[in-house]
Amino acid sequence: MADTLNGARVAIIATDGVEQVELTQPREAVEHAGARADIVSVSEGPFQAMNHDLEPADSFPVDRTIDQVSVDDYDA
Image 1 (tube, helix red, strand yellow):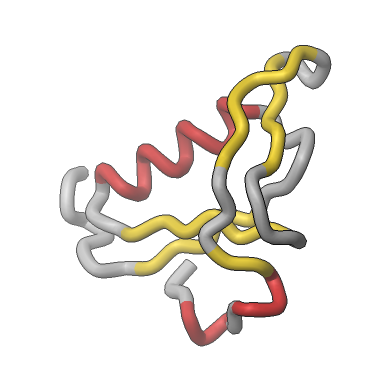
Image 2 (cartoon, helix red, strand yellow; image 1 turned 90 degrees about the vertical axis):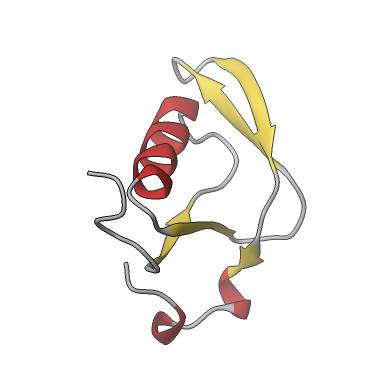
């Protein structure tokens, strides 16, 4: 599956409270397939992911905010 998305740009939209595994596994998959994945969120700065919807997990930096992107910037 490596390089099947070679050169594609993918926006992953997430914010505080996202289940960490629902962010990290898709991101790893599209990057492994050759795409560039940007985390897009509603505000700048890192946001807090969760484990099992209750336990704080890692925080993640935001690549771009919603108001900084356009649908034309991404392939998916």
